[in-house]
Length: 60
Image (tube, rainbow, N blue to C red; front, side):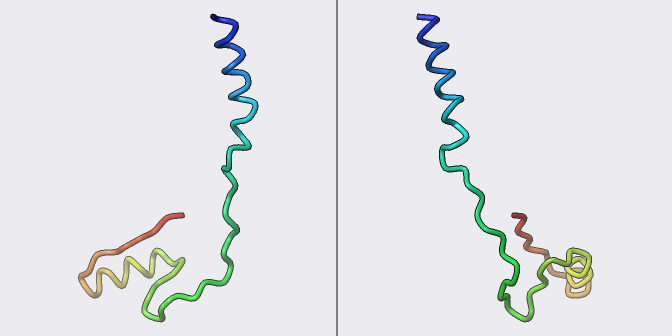
């Protein structure tokens, strides 16, 4: 029983890295709305303080 468990774990670890964990391609030029602040966190905080609105952030 212990031998079968060890064999199953070994095979599982052997094939685990190929189980579809591919990274999506990086996006270099992204079309965003003109009123969005993209890739500039300090500007987003400044605008939020000026307008007294919260920040909606997406971290990828």
